[in-house]
Image 1 (spheres, rainbow, N blue to C red):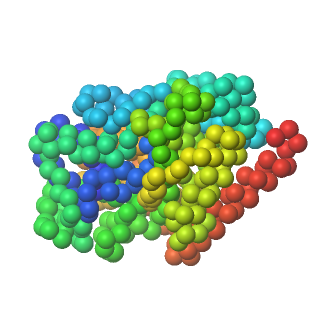
Image 2: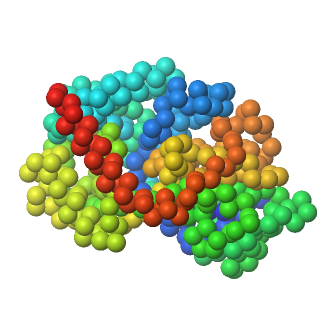
Length: 407
């Protein structure tokens, strides 16, 4: 269930292994966050670093760290192997530090990821200035395996690959029921019914969006995530002069702000960026004002005349501790949720591991730390208060900079 990166990656793994597989998607492949994200291929989690993951999950954590380390390379290898026209550029992913305190975080991350064999390096303030065209950051770090893709093109390319491998993709088929019938799973959708030995639930932030699915294996997953709206915005194609001045080597960039500043170039010369909104009802108009102000702070004078041509949004699934969740949902049934803004690299690799699990591979050989669902207390109130969290994160970011005299 779910025609995003996780579901399609899992389906492809199964189909190429000779398993009869069907993907059931409520709208179209890539309609959700898989096709609406910023297109950065980031081989890390947002907050948890390798030592944290291993301390939390033990041997399963070590395997998961290995998955994360290789996750960006897995994306680019998959694109190359299948010949997907996903506008892929493996130019690296960088995380500049917005304060001196966050520079210490960058040092910690480089030390830990290097210990696990990741292609990382620490960047000085001068290096970050040269790589970004901005002097607002204090340094940072780079993972050379990361980069850029067109997320919708990647998702649709995976869907096509599933069908080439003799899998089936059913679009416009919202599910309203999941049940067990003897030794089979039965998925009841608007346009028909699928009966199968195994079930992979890969609906992430959109779990329960089209029907409540109460009393099904989706219930607990729906209750353990906070769906958060993430906005993206793209400029008109910009001049070669600006493209050479800002991120001239075309790395993907997401900095250390709690309300992160993220930017990348696309192949048409558009700057693609975005962010969260405290008042999502104000939509694209407020986003344009907010992002124009941010770009002027980062790159004074560079984007004053630039026009924004496109704005869109999707949901990301956030967990309270920003750690993804992986579950055994019943006999031959697995699921996941909680991309926490790292869905591209993570999603493709997670799909492969979920497929291995339903094919009978022992947990000790699957690179996912399975555990029971953890329901968010007072979830309706938490969802209602989510926009206020944006204001709080921005206040924390500003306070961190003000409180450090060298920042």
